[in-house]
Amino acid sequence: MTKTASTQTAPQTVTDELRRWIITQAEAGCRPEDVVAAMVKSGWDEGVALAAMETTLRARLDEVAASREPVPPAVPVPEPNLDGAPPFLSVGGHRVEVLATMHNPRVVVFGGLLSGAECDGLIELARPRLARSETVDNATGGSEVNAARTSDGMFFERGEAPLILRIEQRIAELVLWPLDHGEGLQILRYRPGAEYRPHNDYFDPKHPGTAAVLQRGGQRVGTLVMYLNTPEAGGATTFPDVGLEVAPVKGNAVFFSYERPHAVTRTLHGGAPVLAGEKWVATKWLREGVFT
Image (cartoon, rainbow, N blue to C red; front, top):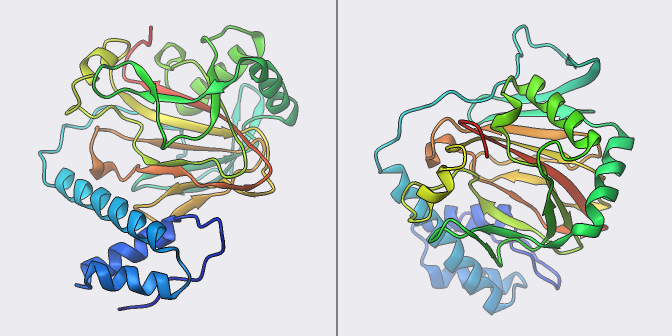
């Protein structure tokens, strides 16, 4: 064993750190029963420990299998103009700070993308229309409620209100991608304990429902997550493959692109559980072509 898992208190949350620890033990040759025993000794419920072990190792096996598959060719992706490493960008007269960048995966953290009034306005427009969030059904290309996503949400039509259109125009100018290549804004509310487990935003070519989804604008090639409030605790956007966590700060945003629908892009990401308060986000997905 390289180390023991830290003691948790009820309710016990399986964190990205714990998943990485489990993978480290497995790849070091530790027996699964020994890893579970170490977790139980550190205060974990045995059932939680077993479930964490099973889901983590299954996901790791899927990741390894994906890495051995042929890698699809790269396609053009959205990309903000960061030549000269500017500390901020002026987008339609709006100042957007460049807080952090990463090249592999391609991640950019923006400060002040939205004003406080714009954040509040999006929340109030969305609140009456919230429903349990759904994800794409990989078998049919439709949508379904998924236990991995425990939030409430809704979609705006592209440009359906002046506030929506103004924000969409700002995003298009910021990442140099046509406005009509974007899906409608999605608004999500995460209550305490709610999360979105690590996933990829591109549509997996192996799934039977992907062909139907791609008819509406091709593959997803970029994501922009905008934080509409600052929760009291928790709720970071996580990138498990690279150990990156982006704090949810009102008005800020995290952008990432993926030039091919494959794990090699290292854009696996998730929404960590909200520990106190609520988290509101607006998400903009960008497609290869015109989204209809």
